[in-house]
Length: 527
Image 1 (cartoon, one colour):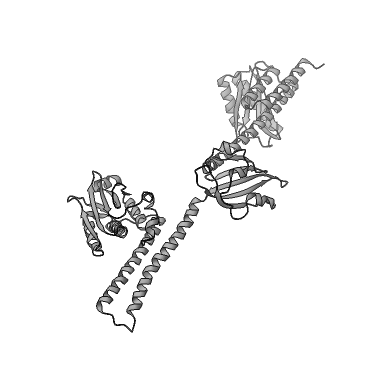
Image 2: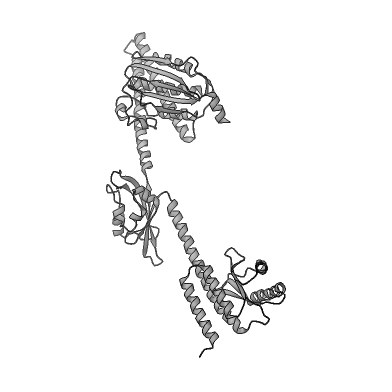
């Protein structure tokens, strides 16, 4: 029969093995190993110190040591060589034991003896176990064997915990990557079941991620119209993927929940293959391409509008010039003057369109250049009203500003562009009637409104009238324009720190107002 201490050693090793496989809390495992080691070696105290991943040592668990003595131990550990990563030797261990013995004897006045044994796993030291006795006498060879067996178990526990921590860290990193990604991401099994998806995809499809997971790819990513090119199923049927780097890209409109419009998306599928070339997963990235679609549509609209708007004045100028240059006709002065007036007006229109395009480009490049000076909006409105009145007999332009309307600090040329554009729009969209340019004084602001007696702005168009290239569908068929005037008007007003809006309560006709800060308000905000 085995001696009692051998039986107990075997039983403790079995208990430690069970603890390692069942307990994920490393400190609890190390604490149990330390207590068993102290008991088996008839010790009174002990510590387990672990080697940090970043270098150096730290006491992870301790038992039976006074705080002052433990502080000495920690000081010793800070002086020990970094002997991990398979660089340790028997000399290193002997040095640790010798220094520990000296420290133990000095610190405790000879009442303690001690022994240190490294915890070795896969050729690397992951920590050291220290056991202390309060009576004289050296640790026997059998004591070292017992402690070595427990140290090896402790090393396994530490390494398992480190692997578990690494796996946990990688999972947290993957979770953070998925949750912070702006694009929708799906992880599919090799038979196209959704194993994982992120919150961005849930937002795109309008369905919780928990509902999407576990469903088949086709049940979640259903096309409103068959996309151009191959679908995932067609590509897989054709042998995709042939290599680990073979990506598949598909564009189309996805179906969404009831009452939601189809969503334009671009989906990139990338395979994850094992070392043997077996398909493990498919990673799908779903990107909302609504803005790209809108940009393409805007580009097409822009080219269509600009080409039409440029052709018209150029054709008129060319026609009148060709007519005036005819050798077989003798035009009287009135016809020549009228023709030259048309040529001048169309040339001015071309110039304004080009300036608007340049301003729109400047806005995209970083904003408009504002040169501030004292500006009288009342005088500016009077000047513009007289100029535009000469261009129409069907409208009456009225300027209505209080006599004490304040001078503001602004870019006069730009504000002239704003008010001129609002008057021009009123004349364009109202066939006749009064056009009123009015001003109002508020405590911190001045407000200017331009109103007409035309058909007004449809409620559905109000949120879009200041968008670039936007033209109300009903008006676009009957009036000229590139859809840049109000877009630039808003940009100019906002560059001054103001605001522009459509007044829906004006009654008959359209009424557009803008506000600008009064001088004292602007100066305070600038400090």
